[in-house]
Image 1 (cartoon, helix red, strand yellow):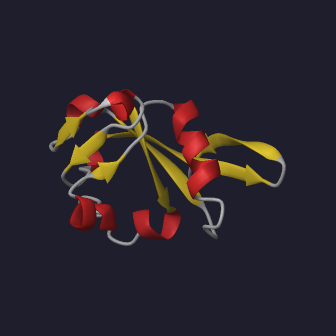
Image 2: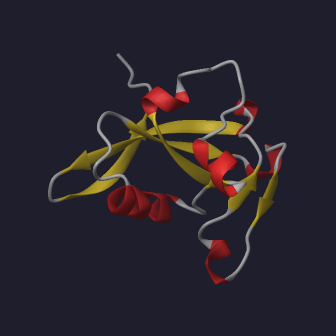
Length: 113
């Protein structure tokens, strides 16, 4: 399993299409994290100023239609998907819980009830 962080508005903008973040055009790949802990660390360090709901999309790496590369020393922690994220590879979607002075956590999204 790998995780991709994405603002809710971006993830839900075109739900019937594969997800293509801006990094795919600008860098040629989609940034991912190899585990929950790394995804949460990235959420804290890179998404602190992002307003609104932040999601962690959990993906079945083997079900992705695009190539996943784990390059260089950091590749094990930060895999790159070299193409759009096909939504049928999504195992779960989590909301990143963010609170000042508290560690981030994940809760199922959408919330029940």
